[in-house]
Image 1: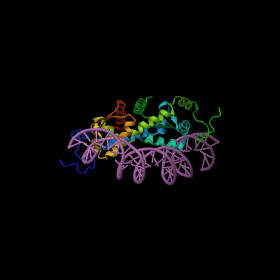
Image 2 (image 1 turned 135 degrees about the vertical axis):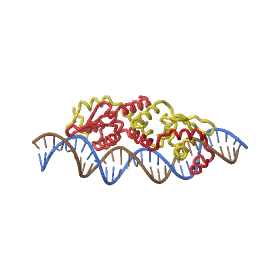
Image 3 (image 1 turned 90 degrees about the vertical axis):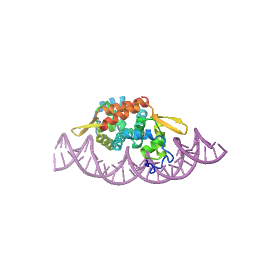
Image 4 (image 1 turned 180 degrees about the horizontal axis):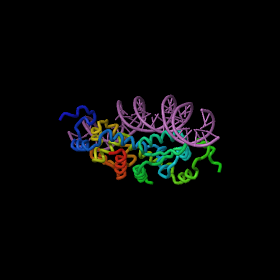
Length: 120
Length: 120
DNA sequence: GAAACATATGAGTTATTATTCATATGTTAT
DNA sequence: ATAACATATGAATAATAACTCATATGTTTC
């Protein structure tokens, strides 16, 4: 019953102890929530959103994406790497070129829900 | 027909002109994609993800959230402000306290799809 | 094997953002 | 009105991340 002197915040009395404890018990592991944030971080950048949207429409090679977005090949390549590491995109080599596409349905759903929220 | 000398990338020949033009025509406005990235940016931080998850479980006041996450009242309040501005959370005042809750179903869907992607 | 091309990547710089600290605002009780 | 408390917020600092530049890797053609 003496477990809150290490917390500086809410010095007075714990306001809703029952709720806090219940929700705390239900919370996913710290690590899972971290991974979740890392995943969404990838959606949280204009360049990557554009890349995902482009791939939403069609498989495309790095050079085409760069040209379409008016950005350097290097910048696109760096971002594709991040998306690839998170398994949000797949790639396939065809000669000198590498074609990227969306990896799975979650990406489409997440983008779609986001679009609905911002109001289409 | 002379529209590509301003682009430095892909100096040689445009690799898939037809695809690039088709996808370009289908792309949402720059502004919408920017808003979309801004929205997802809010999901892309551990603290905010935790807050959203906590509110996923139950409406809660600022002090409770701070205590649950072991963070300062100020830090939580700053993040709640960002979430509030994006209409991801609602709030309701009750005396000295302010209770926050999730604003709409999109948040739940987005979190759920994200969870599925990271593997639960 | 050398040249040309498409893509990938490490290092460095700059821009962005989360947190802390100090303090302001709003609410209740005395 | 004053004190006590819960929350909000501006400014400063520290941590993070996007882009550029230079260069490396992988592939094809000669």
